Length: 98
Length: 493
Image 1: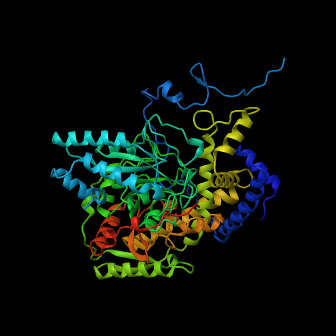
Image 2: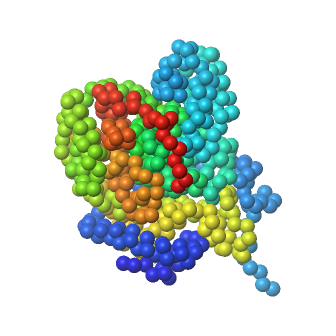
Image 3: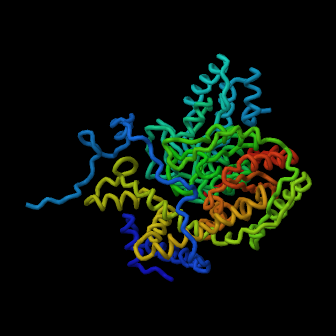
């Protein structure tokens, strides 16, 4: 089952991964081969089998809702490529039109 | 005996008798690194001043009459594990200058036990790989043959231990990344049961599979290092509140009556004949020592690879979504808009294997394909887990090869991703099932080490260590060391 170029571009966009045309072509080949290999899972009857998302029986591990010290702002921003007024600085997300 | 050639327990013994100081030991190890790491290239970042400061502190603690399991012992840490104040790159350009504001729990615990940290070791990018060739910086060379890979993704840690560039190291294992390089480098590598060791501060690759584990020169050291890092951690909600054990108490060389399962599915066509011979001979040795050998079957073994290469990339695609140039790491400077910034940051920051796995994982989780791929894989994962549960009702440990071949040549498998993935066939299942596993040397094909894998049930590390110790005490593979000085410097790769 071969992935189409459109599908490759769609996946790349979901993952916000910029790809060159060469990369798209290479991934088209490689991903198709890997997924074809993965199709052998259809040999296994799993109709009555529950999924295992994680091996431990732990679920919803909570702690008391009590305030504790957390990472100081200065440390949290220390590796940031752009900061402003104690915040992470990013490109505009909303466009304003008058 | 050269100081850098000591094991952790030998060093502890000498230091407790006052025959050597941590400063001398640490300096000797640093000298060793400077002498050989140009060729081995195990380390990404060296912290010699910090190490010597920690060594002085350890000597002072010992002077005051304090003792601790790793007091003054120089160790290395894989670069996917955070060390506060020191760059943690995960082998990726996207984190080339990232300096963590905190240390991982395992690092805090090592330091609490007095360990000295020499530096951060090389890894496949974000722990994705089986040869350390996917490191965004350089390839690590196998100390036994510098033209070959050390395995991966903890290739830097395994090579550093094998080359006596540290007395032990931490690695991480998601699909075999501690055990397979241990086998390729002729050292001991242990993947603990999922939940045994805290993942807080381990940069996440696949959250339901990742575990940090020790890489050491012998089984005793593995028990010591595991004991130092294991235990429940409030900051990791997937860590288990199971009793903390002194794993050194498992080191009893007695396997009489221990049932060792041998799974037919792990002796397949295409595996290297010397590997099969060495592993079968090791199993015979266990029988001679009094173990009862039982033929067992793990029928869904052949599906571990496709399951893993759907589950792990799916989890990775979610875990690596955070690398967007906003809070840390490389950020593309001239983007047209926020989406362009994300796309270009990730395009230029990530290497090929990482991109491939993100793509694979995104596809498996995407609308219309989730049931066919990710959900299906999780269902087969249940069957793989059940295989182990059934087998462990009839035996105490399982013995098998760690890898189908010995270390391959640098560049030999890097063109075909699927070929590369196949080198993990014997280790993947244990991560999927959450059980524990250890690799230890059991022979050589020429100069290249062969690994014996011992698998135990969940929280069965004690039995695994006991069987491993018994085998080790009856053989001497671990005394053989690579002859680095006699090898030529390899040409450009």
